[in-house]
Length: 252
Image (cartoon, rainbow, N blue to C red; front, side, top):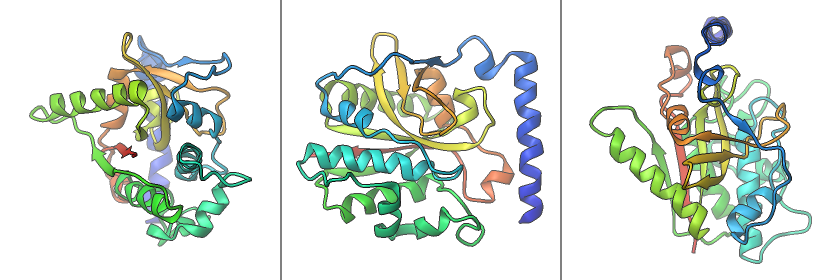
């Protein structure tokens, strides 16, 4: 296991510098657009809440905690249950017992594993909603794919859900994606909430919880789907990371 860990970083650096040298990926023709202007409330309570309660992760593997904290506070505010102060990341780790979440955030991880693969993220999202007594209609964990037989239906479903989030405000999406597809960064699994969608340009706004970033950003829908449907190499797959995807929450 330690040997596998030692293999990851050289591989990540090689891929990063290859894309940088060849001007491909996020270094190429479809880069992210950083959104530096202050957010203006939209009247969509889901979007507005996610921006209001947007927080950064407290260490390199805690993107799931920051993402779920923003979701929980947004939904509690929408349902008139928001505590004072709002639920913190540490509150979540103390109260939500699913999937050994707190242990996975420790330096040694849970049985040597840090962070959350997609299916575990889905478990944690549902357990968090239940722990804080938040009413919801459904929680669905969706693994995206690039398989020729299913990619069109998978893209269409995701596109319809992004439009619903933007226009109706009765749902939200937490994305599990390859960060190096979106940003000029290493190709590592990452988690962050979607903060908006423009149906005209088909661009997706990411409230990326990475604490090294100074602003949200947007990517094209094609890039967004590519990042969600990355098929990780054998080194990451050993730790439970296959394709990425998203967790889709519908509320009452």
